[in-house]
Image 1 (cartoon, rainbow, N blue to C red):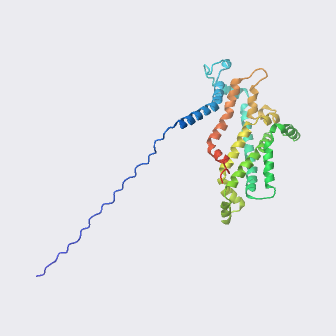
Image 2: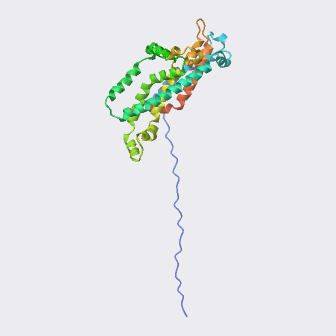
Length: 302
């Protein structure tokens, strides 16, 4: 009789997975409000109110009826929204706005087309006379348009280019070119040249490295030059008044001035036109304010 020996098979005991404890959410420590923080916030709000009150007064005057323009009350009894409609009907404000848009956009494009290659070459190439070139660029920034108006008027009169949008584009582009070159030169100098060398080793030329490597990195500086040129051309008054004598061909700043007569001033229409003039610039600056700040600080830290 055979004896069967039973061998005990070790049972496999399932091992429970380790318990995963969720990390507690990070909570920021409560921010303590110090007297210094309160004073800084109060000073900031007070400074903002000082800058915003003139614009608020401009909007209120634009909505004030004509018979209440000389009243001492701060708010009118009734807001006259028709003032904005009357401005379009009784003046050439639409033509002036179109001219201003063309001049601002055209001069900005002209400045960028000239300033980007000039600033890039100045920042990358150590050529003879480089410091003299930058000095001449700085000297041209010191000239005021009013000191050159007589010569400019005579020149464009002989060329039969008065009352032309191209004349205002050339003048605004010329007077804003120096600032754009200085800003872009500082920004191109802050970008490492090794990035371009690596791109050229991979097969790109100098132009390709500029367009595909350096220019995207320098976009905050380009935006800074663009917005300052656009605002300067948008707000220009003296050259537009001198070089454009036909009301339909005058920029917006000169067109708004037509509401100031010899004996009376149409304050409600004047301020309504001013509100229309500042809205596009305020919206444009609010959209790209961060890039403008970073562009202005370019080259400050090496």
